[in-house]
Image (cartoon, rainbow, N blue to C red):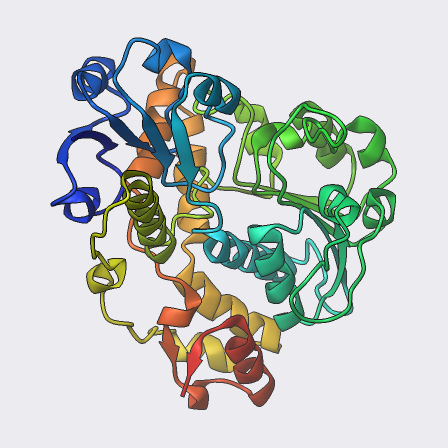
Length: 390
């Protein structure tokens, strides 16, 4: 079997060794991609590749798997009508996204753009990511208000822990913080395209915080930009309409803007490789042992500036210092803003490597910190966030 695979799927060659012959391609190189697909029966991709009839109609591909959580880059109806099986790595990077959100909240709190003490957080979409965000919220002492109409309609329990019920979206609009974690869909009965637009933003406090790390079009970008310009609230974004050709004015108005890297921790990426490997084996009905954990480096101890920690004025400020070391939020924000200063025609090509060449980042559970460096309350919160505190 020939397997065409995006070269940015970590260790995909090693994962598929013994299953088939792997042809790697750069998604930015159309000729290389087409050469890899020639005669291929399986395609392993990421969200950067649009998978539809124009790509696969005349190909031999009979199985497609994306190493990312979302599937809106895949024309699923067409794939199924063409008899092509598909799979995704749903949930693989959920913890990574939630930890990015922890970094955002702590940074905004430090800047006095929001106040986490006694705050409520409205979480729209309680799937893989939303569930992890609720866990992060609990660790930070926030009161979570949950919304997920499809799950509520199915009569599902919102969270595996606690007894928080689902609430109508209108109730979440009154929370101090609103964060979006839904898939992008236009289909009834629960379309999410421009779910948060001018009308709903008008119902929110001018001092609220809006965060989008789901899909760019879940939030009406123009309305959000206007809301941020004319109010005193905060706006944090990791996703944008029209990627990679995004609107620099939206980046400019956002308090925090990162280049669609919230889910880019190495642990989540390798988990995604494992999931597409397992899905391919299931499709082929073969047994093939491969364990992504062998490629994860040893858990490092975070080296935080002890002077900064001693000078911290609150447990939240202590947490910001640690989480800022784990999640390079400000570095990513600065890199995106630099790319927006380029001429219009150069911005898309500058945006892509910010994702494709992202540096090493680990999930909190893989990072060690020394208890003696922190106040009792901060150490407790770090453990609740998942850090190894010893």
